[in-house]
Image (cartoon, rainbow, N blue to C red; front, side):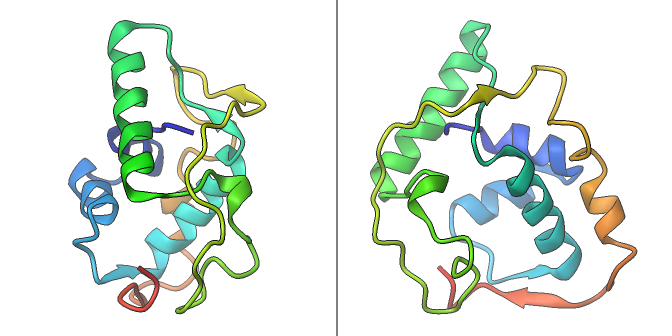
Length: 135
């Protein structure tokens, strides 16, 4: 869809470096809280494009889509939501441009996504999810 890592970090309430390390494959584990927050955000944004009103927004979205294309990452419709967290899951689809059903407002994520990490933190702090088998 083209969401820049910095925007995702802002929506998640986490430092941009955290999301960049995930995108670049440098992260081996994530906390249960972060995993839950990402799941909440994904559920709310899976079919929405990033805002592209300004030149900076368009360049950031284009860079995110270029990274996805280089890595063969499918758009959300190309993954099986029931299997995506499995340790050996490999999507059958490759990257293809997606148009989405709308876009995220420049002010932030859809209603309910803000504070997802904060809400997730009340569930099960301290548990981590191993990403070595997922990536």
